[in-house]
Length: 180
Length: 113
Image (cartoon, rainbow over all chains, first blue to last red; front, side, top):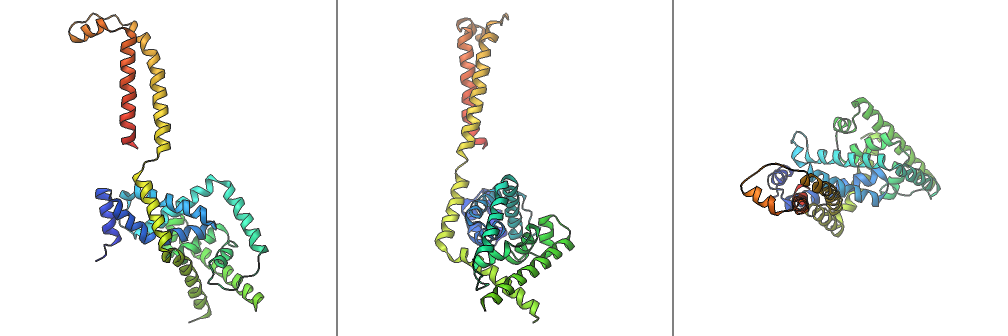
C-alpha cells in the first residue's frame, strides 16, 4: 500500500529520510513545476524555483503541522519562492513585459489545450489575477486557501479569480473568432 | 451545465494538460527528483567556503594580536602550565592558540551547515 503524504512527512521529520522526501518530490513535482511555470511564464526560471522550493520544504518540513494538506503547504512555499525571486530580480518584470510584447506579435492561437496558448493568455492578466487564477485552477486550492496564501481578503481573491477568468474567456473567444 | 461552467471545465482541463506534461515525462521527473536529492545530500559548498575563509581570516587577524598578549603576561604561576609556559615563547603559544582556533572552524563549520 502506498504511504500517504503525511506518513512520508513523518518519516522525513523523524529521520531526515531522503528517500521518503524523494517520493514526496516525485508525487508533487508536476504540480509545483507547472504552477511556477504558469506563474512566471519562463520554464527555465520555473525549474530553478521549483528546485529551491523543494529544498526549502525539506529544511522547513518540521513546521508542517498537518493542519491543511501537504499540497497546499508546498504550494505556499513555491509561491513564496516566486515572490522572493520576483522581488530580487527586477529584470523578471522586464522579461515579462518583453514576453507580453512577444505575445501580441505572435499568430493567434488555435487550441486552448495548448500549454503555450494558456501561457499567452495568462500573460495578459495582472499579477494578482494570474496568481489567484493559477492557485485556484492549476493547484486546485479553495478560494480561502488561496486567500491565506496570497495574504488577501477572501472577497478580493474571488474578485481576482472572476476577473481573471473573464479576461481569459475573452482572450480565448477572440482567438477562436480570429481562427474561424 | 451553463456556459460559464463549461468554460471553467475547459480552463481546468487546460491547466491539467499543462501539469500532465510534467507528470508523464518520466525521464524529466526522475532527473528533477535526482537533482533535488543531490542538493539535499550535499551541503552548499560555496557557503562553507565563504564561512570557512571568513573564520580563518578572523582567526589569523586575532592570532597576530596574541603574540603581544602573551609577551605582556607576567603572572606568578606553578604546576604543569607554568612549566610549559617557561619553555614556550610567546610566538609558540600564539601559534598554538591560532592552530586550535582554525581547527575548531574546520571541524565545526561543515557540521553546522
